[in-house]
Length: 291
DNA sequence: GCCCAGGTGAAGC
DNA sequence: GCTTCACATGGG
Image (cartoon, rainbow, N blue to C red; front, side):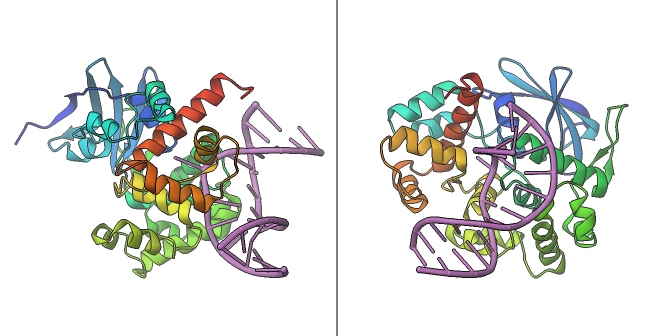
């Protein structure tokens, strides 16, 4: 067993850390003094990225870094994923625009709760809501920051004990009853997030969609960003725009049609392709406000 | 003021 | 099956 340390460096290839942590998968990462600062489970962590490596710094000595390598998916062969994409012009452009973008492997509960809060919200606002929720209900955890206290993501049990009004005070509006009911279902043991690991993607999706406030899109996000079902293909407003503009320029296909198209067209790593399309559309929109 | 945001659920056909 | 609407809140 390795000696406990507070820092570690991993060699990486084709890993765009900023694109990955800032692409609307996770909502707690902050860019502070040329580094990404965030919370993974009970760990506060600061990440710096160089040409061929990622360096992590924690608050307390660590022997087993699996929680981090798993979260960042450092063992994934990105080339193999990119090679599985369809060879068409839209995918070439999207990959070229953000090569090195990765999918994270997040905690299912945090991912589920965060995306329940995401509906018809901009990413900056989702961040704000999640931040308020953690500050108000999350357990304090050790940090190397002197300026602020840092909290873990609140447990289902803690949120289950909250009132709807308390949740609404975190600016989540009409999403409050959904989050509360979902937290209670999980805290009660009526719903078992761990059991989903054994399911097929389709069954796991059906299960997730039984939860209040969880429809097809949010279920697909959880399948993709937490459970690692890489065929899951969340279709939000940006991906819908991407598919319509890039693949159906002068028609207006239904959402159902787009789902069928995504299943047939993008292959076993469709979810990865989706994230490239999503990020491409968003960054392009930022650079070219007219389009 | 307006329109939009990593949507969902209920109600109407 | 589909379409329409309400639902809070804040950014541009």
